Every structure is written in C-alpha cells, then in structure tokens.
Amino acid sequence: MLRRLPLRQILCLLPLLVVGYWVVQHRSLIGSGARQMFTANPYWLLTAVATTGLGWVAVSFARQGTVLERLPARRLFATQFAAGAANHLLPSGIGASAVNIRFMTGCGLPPARSSAALALYFLAEATTRVGLLVVLLLVFPQALRLGPLLPESVSGMVVAGAVVAAGALVAGVALIRPVRRIVVRFLRTAMADARSLHMRPSRALALWGGSLAFPLLQAAGLVAVALALELEVRPAHVMLAYLAATAVAAVVPSPGGIGSVDAALVIALVAAGAPVEAATSTVLAYRFITVWLPLIPGALVLGGLVRSKIV
View 1 (cartoon, rainbow, N blue to C red):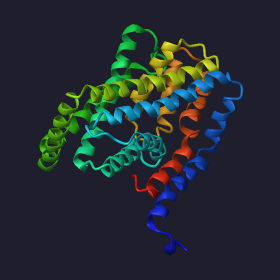
View 2: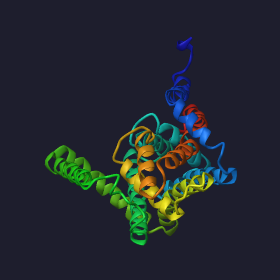
View 3: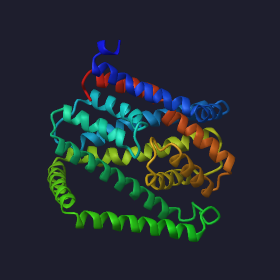
View 4: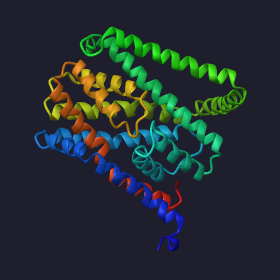
C-alpha cells in the first residue's frame, strides 16, 4: 500500500501524525487549559483568539519586509499559520524557519538570500521585543518582584552562564576558519539585503511594523485572558510579565516552547503579583488558545502546502 503512495502524499500526512502524537502526549495539559475557559468571560476569550489571528497577519507583514520581491499574500499568510504547527516538530523555532525557507525558495529566492531574510526577521523581532521590554521596565520598574522567586545567587549564575555561552560562541566563530568564512559571507549578504530593503519605505515599514505588532498582539492576548479570568494584575504589568518570560524562555530550546514558556509565564505573573493558582490557570488558558487550539488546523494546512509543493 505504501509503495503506491507518492512520497509527497506521505510527507503531507506526516505533520498531522506528529501533531496528533503531541496532542496525545499532552492531553492532560490541554484538558486543564480547556477547563479554565469554562468559567471565563467569553468576550475577553474571543479577544484573545482575535489577537492570536492578527499575530499571524503581523508576522506575514514582517516576513514580506525581509525581501524586495513581492511574495503571494495568501500563501504567505497560510505559511505563517502552518509554521506554528511545524514549530512543534523541532526546538527553538527550527520548524517554522525551515517552512519559511522552503516557501521563499519556492518563490524563486536563492537559499543564501532566504537565509539572510530569515536572519533579518529574527533580528528585527528580537530588537523590538527587547526594546518593548526595556521601555516597560523603565516605566514600571517595580512591576516584577523577583526577589522571593529568584535569589541573587541564582540570578548571578544565570547572568554568568549567559556571558560564558556568548563568549564561547564568539570565540568559536573567530578561531575556526571555515566557520568564520561562512559567517562573514553570510553577514555580507545579509547587510547588502538590509541596506536595499531600508531604501524601500514600504518594506522597512512592513518589517519593523510587523515585528513590533507581533509581540504586542501576543502580550495583548495574555492580557485578554487575564481579564477573562479576573486576574488581579494591572494589564501593563501582565504585558511586562509576558515580554520578560518569553525573553527568558527563548534560551531554553523546547519544541513550541512547551514547558519553558509555560513555566516562565507562571513565574513572571507571580512576580507581577498574581497568586500561583490564578497565574497557572491564566497561562493554561492562554496556551490553549494560542498553541493547542490552532495546532491541528495548522498541521492540516501544512500538509496541504507540502502536497501543493508550496513548501
């Protein structure tokens, strides 16, 4: 039977099978998130669903802003929706990156320029996310109280570990000649593309506007869920907690952020003044809306894109 099926038809079923396995493995977590929503305000939950959908639109704009060529809008949006399911196959966003590189290569971009566009997207998204975090920390310096949760000795070890890891990475690039040659060639391509893009106001606006809107919409989704569950934390503090938690969780390479993002969000909300039980309920409901609810539809779209040879 398998011999009669073309390879591409088998591959288009693979995302759905893997996601189905993930759903079975995390069924208790999904069930907990769903149960939290029964007592919540449905209008605020619908707002969280809407901000999640608008987040894919924002990412689509940001991805378009990384290349001079005009990408097909509908396929671009479908690719971003499917990339969310692909993110659960590999850690640290590798699944979404692979889907986007395949999409841009299929649109006629050389692999080097597709990789440069991906790097530019990550740079813009990280810059705007960290910039928002810094602004909120300056405006609300007392919003997060990490003292009882994270002793100074532990925080010092985290900072020291990050510095050592960054130093090892820089040393490896500088001392290993083949790696240095690849990195230099890649940076030249990326810088040339970045200069060309910023000479086109429409592309620069799409890149930075989409990169700024995406974390704002994600944080707004968490605020909506917190309001739906009547979490007694100020919305601005919830946004700050989200940005801080996702910045920390990005260091931990887990598929789809399962575990790392959940734990970081609970800790951040508790640091913002929420009770542990209420913070846990809020995070479970938020992750149900943003991760588990679109997971199977995203896998179906991904399978369709593979079958249509779009990715």
